[in-house]
Length: 130
Image: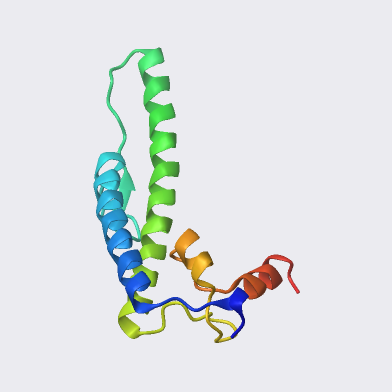
């Protein structure tokens, strides 16, 4: 292992896990603000539709806020999925290992992007469609 590819230690993983759990809790709270339970949605959650009134400008404001809520909900759900995946990899003892090449992911990458599941070379190859 080169100095450039320094694997992450267990203490750092525990710090990252603590941060991910705190982020997960905050995301769950944020989702409550923009979404509601909806059995008709595949994930059981749908964006809240605000009710301001019946005037045209109020209707336009409702639609604009609803559109924002949908976009926000999608971003929060994606982030939550990534966090849950990282936490699962920690529980399985494979956190910090690239899912493509099986090599350790650089500790600096994991500290910058704790949900990363691929090393920089593999991610670069994927993004460049190599």
